[in-house]
Amino acid sequence: MAHRSRLAGFIIDCQTDDLAGAAEFWSEALGLPVIDPDAGDGIYAQLKDGPGDLHIEVQQVEHPSRVHLDIESDDIDAEADRLEKLGAKRIGFVKRWWLMEAPTGQRFCVVKMHHPEKGVAPNDWD
Image (cartoon, rainbow, N blue to C red):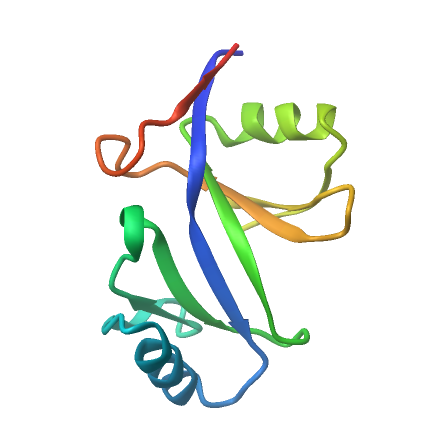
């Protein structure tokens, strides 16, 4: 199915009980102010978009701390199918996005594209 996708941004997964402290650290480290300290479900803090309009959030998690990327698409199922053909595997559907794993073990998410008019033009896939 024809659809579009592109790199959306980075999520900084923090195994911590202090989301505000983690967000403040990453805000200062990256020079990007916290614009929404409660961006969703009480476990996300959104920083100002980074270079190239990349979306950056700090996320409170239970697994070990790491950074993961999000790929945004106007059809998340079609994008997940495309990525599976490249060797990725679906780990599970979480709320409204696919959690996936690359053939090399890195976890990433396929999320809904909200602002296709911003940033770099999405890739078109058949």
